[in-house]
Image 1 (cartoon, rainbow, N blue to C red):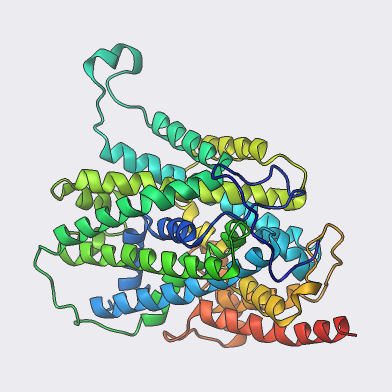
Image 2 (image 1 turned 120 degrees about the vertical axis):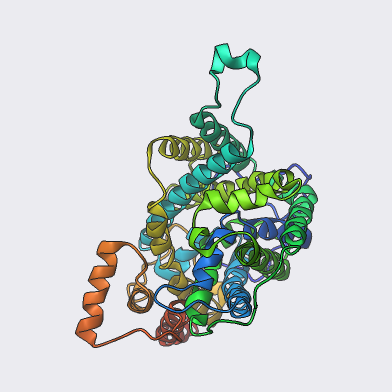
Length: 466
């Protein structure tokens, strides 16, 4: 199977779902509004407001002004979403999911390496989202059952029940992904918009501090958080855009939907910190969630956001399924969805996931330069030569610019996993390199990977044109 510039839109009934294996062609049923609904919901996370504190107070730097932090959020979101939107176009043109597209970049066998990394991070994020959803629901929903249930369930709602419910719903959604996208478009995006606007209004009724007081020195480190959050969805983009009716709608739907809602989510956190939440407590999920619940009828608005968070765990689980299908194209996606959902639920019940988030961010950082390599090579070569078949030949040189980009990212920002930071600090000393506050790990790693990919792409294009 090789890439084609445009595939005809197949007239399908509204209840159509993706094929069970990668052997059958994907239905093209998602229009502009479907994709705006999908990406708009993915951009709005209940963890966004919590993450805003890391933009406002970058590690080792003075606190930014609220205006500076909001500007960094918007700039980082636009840059990160641009990578999602561009990464969605190849899926819309070829009909191939994200990890299968990497066959054209690396060859089938070498594509297994980023596929395995993606599977690990997606399962991890599925677990993390289930934990967050269950914790938020447990904080939101009254902790006591009606008295008549005490003999069956006990006096308090057990935590494991929240986890199991979140895991079951995640699995069910992953089995019917296109149906979920249509529900998000028709109902969820409107409910989320109303709830978010309401929380803004209630928070901004409180007195505001001086919004311009503070530093701008942490602009790029702060923007990197927004970039990284957005680019973490780049490895998922073509899993959905392969069902788009056109490449234009795939690009525009992602760009509009995700940009608006991620920026709104993060700036909502700034509003909470500026009004009702102490900066020292802003990294605590419980405190931030309590601030939203405490406003008049806040429990209802926050409840909408908690329910919407299921689309994050659903997207991670479904993309895990299609990533596994790159390794085993004939596996039934429904069976895989049950296995992945069950595994994520069991891990959510047994693991302490809080400290694992930093490791997941570390894994996600490898996809910034990978997206650069994919974008430059795909658009730099003629798409007719983009081979996503099971016989795609190995391209041994293509991992080099990717790995170079990963190295640049880690040199500038090695993250927060102790042993990993120690290794890269040692490398910094060897190279006599000190990261500066103006350096963006995302931008620099993307630029290095793209520049190193360009000559390899031009060489491949020259050979293919003969």
